[in-house]
Image (tube, rainbow, N blue to C red; front, top):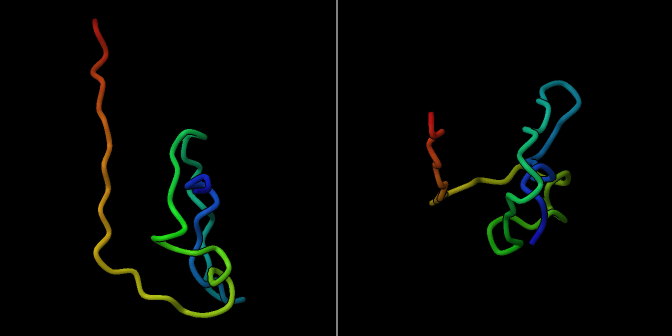
Length: 59
């Protein structure tokens, strides 16, 4: 597992964006996307599942 803020896909020299700064506790697994391929080739992401928890502000 590694921080989701470190997640990235192939970045060529012409078109690349800045990584999203997620909170430090949000993680992703190497089973989903290995970092060793992040900067070496184009990768296709399929079947992405996102689980988030919402805690409403008590006002």
